[in-house]
Length: 155
Length: 274
Image (cartoon, rainbow over all chains, first blue to last red; front, side):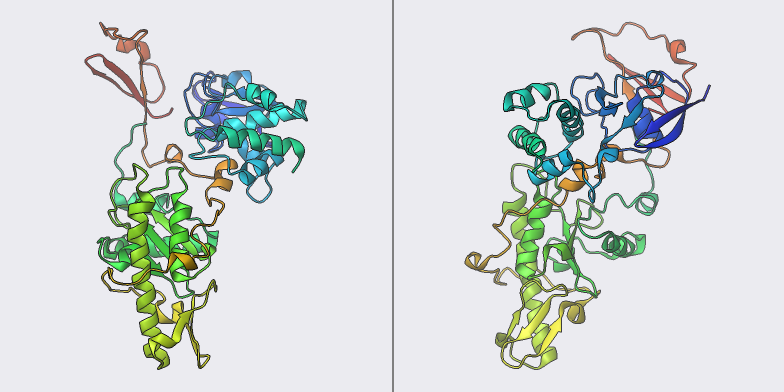
């Protein structure tokens, strides 16, 4: 039976109507709300391309049931910043041109933004550790590390 | 993802998703109005030896590049734009790219093997060099001066041909704006001497990057088409497993279920929602 579920997404209260509240949060964000920041990669929580923030914490939306979100505030890549007003991490990734196809970049940026909120001055090693479970097959890893450093430095 | 085949008309009318634009939104709208309608789609040449297959110039001097090579994330959309900007001496921001639409773009072959610039780019460069030569010849006729007296001013918004001696000038828009070149690509048309390059060879920020970093870029996976269905493969528990039996009644109550598909060891489910 279709159920309406209230959500708080990118600063706004909204609701989605779904047949099954146990669907992944990712599907509700992409299919019901038309958001394209979070992406379906593996669907198993292993690659990170679906990452969103729940109350500031980076979570894998492909393995987070919609029913588990409750009143938590969701922020997606779109909510982080826009091309005109990018978040400092987005700005740094743009400055470093840290993407090829860019499919994984949602996860890289969302994970990095959550990480930098708790570690303002990370070493290269800490950045690599923080992003170790975000997979990219293009190979912009070194640029990504530079971008996170740049964001941390507030350049 | 399974797709119900939409008619081409619905596809173009409803979405505009085949138009990849890297310039201002207002320009995108214009280009789509011009190129997206079925009538114009039918009319546009995609022959590899036609200049019009590759390039169009609107009345304001804005350039559309039609590329059969597709930017998969290697940055060729930006790089091919640099080639056209260089040959035509217009700013990068005045060029938009339409990629990989078989109704609009020339068949430049597959996008693979690092060949987009060295093969596709060279074809585009020759079309642009032919266009530049034709624009200069037409300008000579209109201004009543010898073609040798003319040069294209670097980087003006509207594309400006100027005479060196008399100060006469005319813009690309006035010369060709909105009309076709109706010209074969001339293999003898001289491309610029690389020693004079100002745009090609420079590191240019990729046009697609800001959109990709902010969730604004449309990937293939983001398309929503009329009547689109979703398919899911039911994976076996182990490599080499054999599918013995399927209890279709187990999914009978799934809302929006369309079909259970079984072919040998393959099992999938098709439904209206993901």
